[in-house]
Image 1 (cartoon, rainbow, N blue to C red):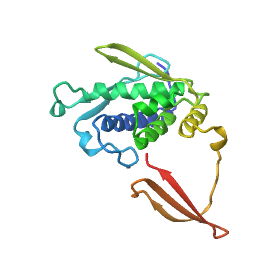
Image 2: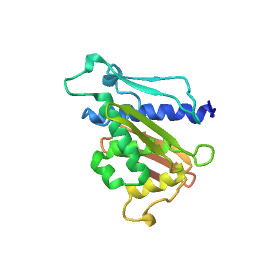
Image 3: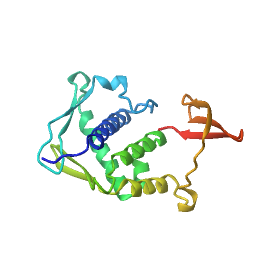
Length: 209
């Protein structure tokens, strides 16, 4: 029975839950909605996430995704489809296959959101070396491990978002000043506008997701 820092574990469970319900909404063909990863209201009654007490391992718990019988449709198993799509996406991100990920998640907003949450789930490479998922279904057991440290995974994701090359990415800019506007209601992208000490306005666009 291993131990771990509570923040390292609890935050990953929250991010994983956000990823689950984002994936479920995508599997149901729903349009992407901003909202900080909150569970969509129309999914609140259809899927439930349960967690067991820790079990013997480096540090492991069992998460069970339950599907309400009220939402059951003939030939459709939302919880199984959601988990398969989620693990498929994590596998592709871990190996850096963003072309196939784009085919799997063609919606830009869902794909950007998926990559961002996957980065948060990734190990730090120091205290946490691997974040693994084992899924059991009628087709058998499947194991997916995020082993790429978060910093390296971030570089892979940035290359996936900017395939023209490393020279076009990874430029850190810090802007300090007065916040004039923070608009997340725009259809295509969010907008942040800041005026710095030299009275220069900086407009920053934020992709949906």
